[in-house]
Length: 298
Image 1 (tube, helix red, strand yellow):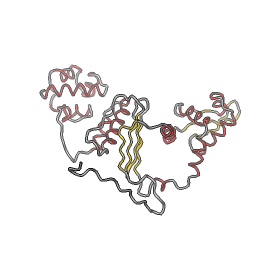
Image 2 (spheres, helix red, strand yellow):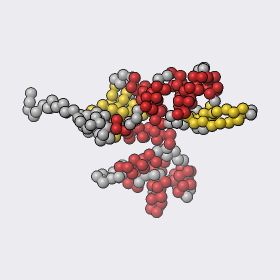
Image 3 (cartoon, helix red, strand yellow):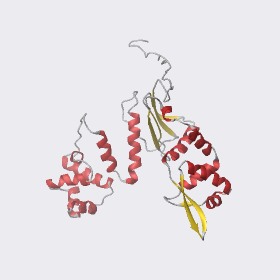
Image 4 (cartoon, rainbow, N blue to C red):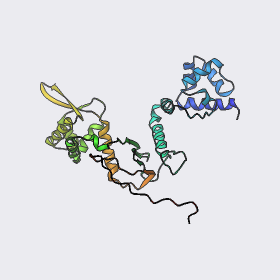
């Protein structure tokens, strides 16, 4: 295929990826829609317009002309930044998951093929990474996808815990079906919407006293915020939900923990020590691995 055909194909493809019409691209380029149509069908833009065209399409001229450059010094962060910024918002989460999945697969020493997220999975499927330096878990079934990554600190994750009292209080709070129902109800709200205890009680069929007890605990954790209002000359306390990201992930991961993770794709385990460390710095002796088959050994 000649360079002109490659350019036209890539121009059309990139414009549609960004959700732009010929008219919208023409407006950005300060040319007529007919000019864009010609670029896509029969002629090149003027040379001085090419850099601007690449900029408006958030790509490079090399990509437009199908030139692949192999450079060991390439800026990976810049490539990821360019790719995600050029992706329409409604497609960004899928692109993010594909990048993260490929990164996880790249840590697998047993394969040198590029990890590519499939369009669908027959079973509930996870991808896992466990080494002495990092942990990662990803659910890759399309009905709910997530990617969690942890860089293990030198002194272990438990060095971060400190006083565990509030951790226990949080787990005690979440160990209640009514608490999870209230969190789910509040979490389904729009930003800055306020709720009264009486309204939550009526909507969920939970006694007012129980709702107030749970809300007070959530308030102490900073998971809700309260304001005082006068309604019909009566003082009322209203609560807003903070939509805390860690709490959402805790609940999703709690469900993961209680599932039987039968299907893992891939499951990379290159570790000798867990993510926790002993406070005195002692380590168990590494269990020696069985040596692999020697050359010519039968």
